[in-house]
Length: 261
Image 1 (tube, rainbow, N blue to C red):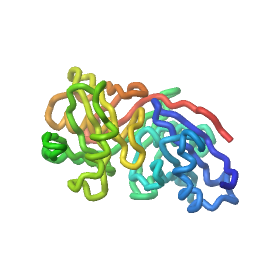
Image 2 (tube, one colour):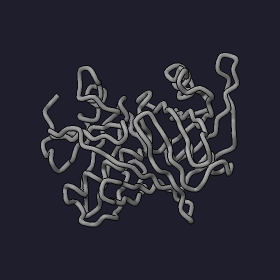
Image 3 (spheres, helix red, strand yellow):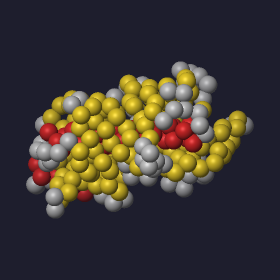
Image 4 (cartoon, rainbow, N blue to C red):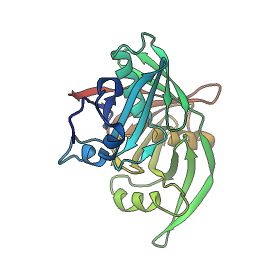
């Protein structure tokens, strides 16, 4: 692997390697993308949940998001919060409220910088009716939610003893999901507090997932089971998720730099 400049950033345990295109003029980015599994390997590589490319083109900030297996994701809430922090710190914008384009889908999101708290507008959720699948004779109910990327939201009794590697992987690759899916297993603590663990498509269990937090919120809000602003606890920490009057969902929380090269 040829050397390249990067930043490793963390958003509540959701860590990615961030590569700024303008800082790497000699890098073949398609080859770098293919090396994402090696880069993400926590034993022999940098170690991360994936790779995010970002830059500025014709005045517009953009990014591409890759899972640890090099598959390209449609969005990543925590990743976008780190992109927002990095672009602001690099001087790509002097505004504290600006837009980021997701190149895979062309979707444009709003980013807001408020000191150490970073907010991303995740857009409107598409919540479908409850469905079920069979897992070794056990019926598992789930709700499909799209945050431009796919989610299966599952209420689960005991998150501590959950065999997330076995069950999460099974649901991710189930025939009900044509392009695989992220899977969120949640507990509703009360109307303003939710706890969940996540199995991410292409990455496995991660400590946090921003779009997953929004998907869980959307599924419960649709059923009037939670308030319009909730605290969501993940293995890596908590985020605030809320919905605007127009139906857009916002994700807010801190981000940190881990290292740079």
